[in-house]
Image (cartoon, rainbow, N blue to C red; front, top):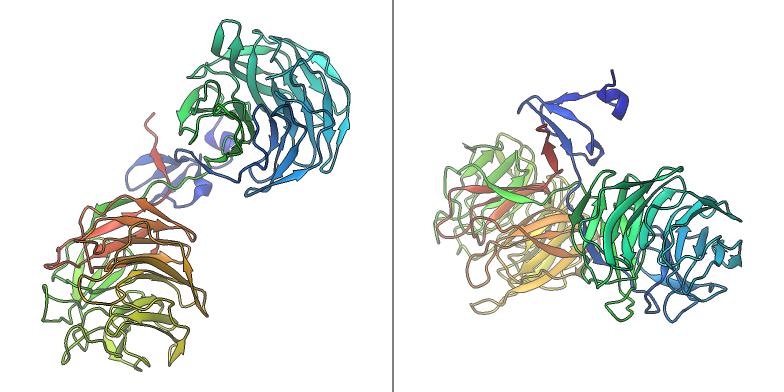
Length: 593
């Protein structure tokens, strides 16, 4: 009897918790805690803007991959050819024969361009630098399907309403078994022996029919959901993708070897584009909308990480409002200091979180709010903040160290810091900025002493902060001035020696908090005109709005090692007793049948 191991190469593992590893995509495991069989699946794919072609055109050919693509011909007709590196297009050697409605197969450095309008049987080979005429096709084709490589290719169907199919060996074409239905179509396949012909146009209009090639004959299989023609197809016989089509269709459908499923639409509907890649990663270049365009879109269906979401966490024992300090991770965190309400008294209370409940532990030596937090729940650093005998808006330079049992006062910072940014660990920390007075001063800690380093470009406190001593983020801040303070969306990135301004937040604010690393972080809440629930995710280059926190918070704190798992705690006046847990992980599916 065939076993799962024989098919997939792995036995069914018994795991107490679900793995957070995309390598488990398609693999089956048994969760012994929930008593469920599970697997990881990809999340819904999406299109995003890619680099634009240099020349606007439609009815062009394409081949290669999303990061090493080739686009050729099309237009009026044109002989122009461009290569793609995943970000920009470069003009290279022209075709010998200008044409449109042609197709291609192969790679960026070894391709064949074949057929085209009107009724062309011409074929050319590309070697990465120039085109060479090769053997003509047995039958003229345009708007046809192709599969395979430049030395083992396959062309089939297309205009003028032909059923003809032929293979290519690198120099000559050989006719093989005909399609069942003559039509203009889109086709794809990784080899000349396994291909798909999808949709198309017959004399009475667009069709949804699909045929599969097994190197001997064509067999009708499951129809596409939206009939169309002048669309693009990429992928393999077992995993393909079609997109676009006439009249300016935006629909995208994926083929799993049995059936078609509609996925995310193109941003702009178009027909007769140049497409290439796989069902996971593809590009859609040029085309008509209806006029010829240069725009290019990139398809990504490779991710197994699901959308993040907030869930209710455990209630704290004591209210911690107005800038308490969070340290650690979602399942092992500290919450220290803050105010007991909307103003004084400041508090020295410390609580520990185990992922489900909060427990009061040893108090700080000095009550304070707006301090920085660094490290873990068992090895932490508590820096600066505001505390008596001065006003709660006056910053201090005091530092305390936590060993998992008690707090000890250690070497003071060089400058006072409160409402400041903090990152790093107990022995390798970074503090930056302050609110009272408003400065951009930055210091590093090596476990024994503090050193002043490069200042922030923009002064102020209340920045959301996360990262390490050598790679950190400061997002949004209060730059000073009389209330109401002017909120900023400005963000700066620290590289270990200097601060650089990077992409702004989508919504300018101050008094929020964040967690993560410099390339994967999250900020939530903050003050705009009132407490906010807005959440934004940082990927190292830009911010994306994600699911709102169910509780609007301002001047709160957070804890979390990466942007995928974290806590939002305290803040407001009075402070909410609860906490919220942010989780973004693998797209785990329970097997029910």
